Length: 163
Length: 284
Image 1 (cartoon, rainbow over the protein chains, first blue to last red):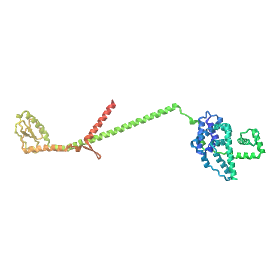
Image 2 (cartoon, rainbow over the protein chains, first blue to last red; image 1 turned 135 degrees about the vertical axis):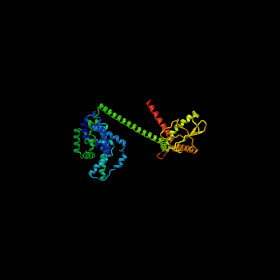
Image 3 (tube, rainbow over the protein chains, first blue to last red; image 1 turned 45 degrees about the vertical axis):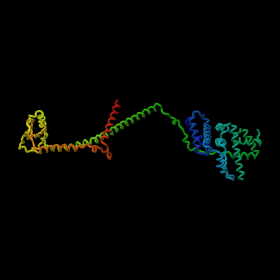
Image 4 (tube, rainbow over the protein chains, first blue to last red; image 1 turned 90 degrees about the vertical axis):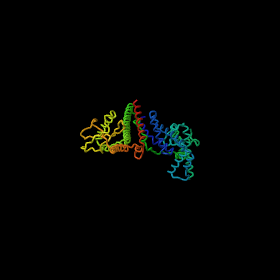
């Protein structure tokens, strides 16, 4: 990979990698650091990385960096999330419903959240997600379906409560 | 596989994740069209899907890299840099050594001359005192010194030939010489072998230099003798009084510090000896 190809990869994938990380950890500075690390590794290993798999390489590095970061800061504890993201059961307008869904997503564990983000934002298929997250295709399918059903039940519960 | 109420949920999830083949997707579309309940279920699942949103990484310039960033210097060029920098360091060191040596020499010279000045101060004072006394000596008539020589010779002669000098002989002083008076004449006591002091007073008229043979002794009275001895004693007394070498005068004052001259001199001598020893060791 030449420096031109690398800089093109920066232009193409930096935003997506950053969005994936920042939506996961909800911390911009830490997300920037993780993105910097991912691209630094791409630059160091530019001669060995397949140019056709640069995007998945970046997401793979960023995902594992994020998992390490989460383990270090222990930011995602279930108690903290429930305390900070209590959902109001009353009726909310549509634009507020979106925020409610996002908050519900943040109640998921990091793996479920990453599965949804990679699927909905980046459009990866199960196999690609499995490669990035070091999971099998069937694991990706089961975990992702379980996360979606949890979100649907939570949302329907909210809608019934508001009605 | 035929869709029914039991397995539709899994197919709907695969449907929204776009993981179905074209034929499977067509089968789901057919089921959805015939079953409004499944359509509601599909809408509920689609509601919890995240809609793509744009999030920008604002500092992309920090991620850009260029091959020039990894450019390395030629090792031979680096060596030339090391060499030039090393020579520069040596030059700086030599300059520092010169400056240090010069400053040490200047300080040493200053200390040496300062100490010498302090130590020579008593001698200078003595010299000044002697110089002040000199006029007193000069007040003594010049003819005294001229007279002393022949009389000393006469004394020697009298010791060797006591009979050659007639005792109690006095040569009369010519009255025509106005400059010499009995009071100004130098008087020397000549001790002969008979232990009888003979005062010899040589007279001369200034024009003629008296010789040993021409010199003669004159007897003077006791008053003249006493006055002459008093003059000598006065001169000697004045000299000894002025050259006072008591310890109080040897004290050296540096600013308000009072130093013992002898001790200070001893210290300086030891220091000079130490410097000489170091110098000799270095030469070896």
